[in-house]
Every structure is written in C-alpha cells, then in structure tokens.
Amino acid sequence: MSSVKDFDISEYLDDRETIEEYLNQALKDGDMNEILEAIGNIAKAKGITQISKDTGLGRESLYKSFAKGAKPRFETVLKVLQSFDIRLQVG
Image 1 (spheres, rainbow, N blue to C red):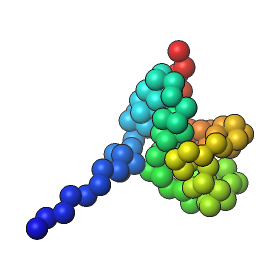
Image 2 (cartoon, helix red, strand yellow; image 1 turned 90 degrees about the vertical axis):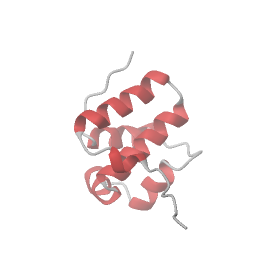
Image 3 (spheres, rainbow, N blue to C red; image 1 turned 60 degrees about the vertical axis):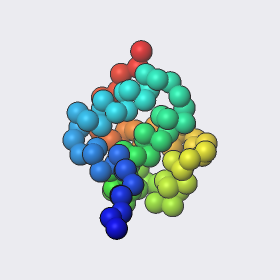
C-alpha cells in the first residue's frame, strides 16, 4: 500500500521569480484569505526562523498571524512582505 504525500506549495517556492508570480497572482485575485495564505506559504518556504530574525517578530506570532482564519495586523503583514525582498505589482 502506497501513501500519497499532501501537496505543499511552499516546497515549490524556491526562487524569486516563482515567489513574485505566486504572490502577485494572489494580490490580483484580491481574496484576502488567499493573500494571507500565500504570504504564509512564502514565509514557510523561506524559513519561519529566518523571517523571524529579519522582522523581529516571534516565530509563534508568525505562525499564528498566517494561520487559516487569522486576522494579522497590517504592520505585521508589511514587515513580512518587506523581508521577502521581492517586487510586488498591484493592479
């Protein structure tokens, strides 16, 4: 009996171009839950520990901020986005 591994998009967010396209698409779609999920997936791909160091936010706080149904503060979202060092396009 073989088991099927759950799909984890963060495993595929391994270069700047892919990350930018993924996040820009989420922003273009405009669904806030999708945007927050995308940010969380990118943070996971880059490493929550590294994002924590870059932003000064605690790891636990980051996990909670981007968990399904969370409502993080804009300041938190902005700090995390800035730590990605990517270019965003809105519109």
